[in-house]
Amino acid sequence: MFESLTSRLSNTLRNLRGSGRLTEDNIKDTLREVRMALLEADVALPVVREFVEQVKARAVGKEVLESLTPGQALVKVVHEELITLMGEANEELDLSTQPPAVVLMAGLQGAGKTTTVGKLARWLKERKKKSVLVVSADIYRPAAIEQLKTLAAEVGVEFFPSDSNQKPVDIARNAVDAARKKHIDVVLVDTAGRLHIDDEMMSEIQQVHAAVEPVETLFVVDSMTGQDAANTAKAFGDALPLTGVVLTKTDGDSRGGAALSVRQITGKPIKFLGVGEKSNALEPFHPDRMASRILEMGDVLSLVEEVQHKVDHDKAQKLANKFKKGKGFDLEDFRDQLQQLQNMGGIGALMDKLPGMGNIPEAAKNQVNEKEFARLEAIINSMTPHERRHPDVIKGARKRRIATGSGTQVQDVNRLLKQFTQMQKMMKKMSKGGGIGKMMRGLKGKMPPGLPF
Image (tube, rainbow, N blue to C red; front, side, top):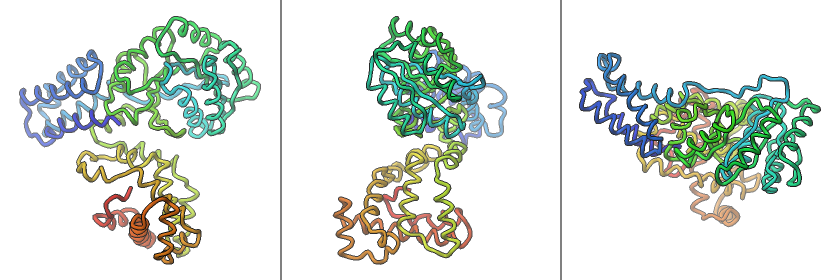
């Protein structure tokens, strides 16, 4: 996420961290680089100007120039101004109303609105323990109604049926009435999108808004459109009382212009980020954590929250109990660990949140291959239950059969078994005491290239 912006800003500021003395020239050079980094990230020009002016005003002030570590003090200023730019703190959904609380979703076609409704429904159900009903008022795309029905079934929430012969206002109003009778906490209303903003679209969504009086009106926008995302959000904000923005497809956005421009241009907070295609790939937006990620300081808090919510604690407890009983780590446990990592968005998503990842050589980063997960899992799935529990029996003929069954080569099976053996040794050390710290010290320098963790 935002790789190019992160790389440019981090390289610029890294040279300053150890500076014992700042001069007018190196402050000027640094600010020029910061300006260029933001412009290349497609941050809106007025936003760039104001940001650089704010940093400059503080950079030549006492807090930086009279600091014992002026270079680090300037980095701290940039970090704090990034937080201010993106909105200071996370702003949660305000659902404090007589149920059902209605959340209206607006946005252009192709922004990922319907998918976001499914993700938000799951987030509300799992994180906030709310009962949720979803409804589509998009009468122009029957496929959107079917898509939402499928998503509702996938995440386990109520779906209110609708069809293209009904009026959007009637659909939304009937859905809210049905939710009230069923004592449902939250209604998510998906609305029609267009390829561009037009009067007909705005008039329709204004009518729906007036009919259901939502407590939250969220604008869903594709972050990869850069500063255009902020400009489109402003146009919607002029027509609707928006309460927040959801940025989608941020996992594919290497620039970050939308995230840095939206708050300043619209005055509306970013409430969520779409960070992948899966129904659990939605994160609350924390400006302070995002600023840390952009400057490669990591985002350990989000990482901890992900582990708490996405790791299968029952499986983790079973593995712990297995160790207590003296039973070893087998290939079925290994497969479970791979699946747990995938549930958390893969290694790329984890690396994004770890501090200091910019110091790791590109060659090492490139060895982290997400496709390796699927390959390893396919190989393990091609084994019999007996082979998974007793890997020692896997010899020549068995290896050839497993390779054929998984569409891989015998050397791939050999590589997996070698990786598994090393992982098994580390798990054994961990179970004897010393915990994760001891395991990581043991892993250092021993894991072969290509291992996806």
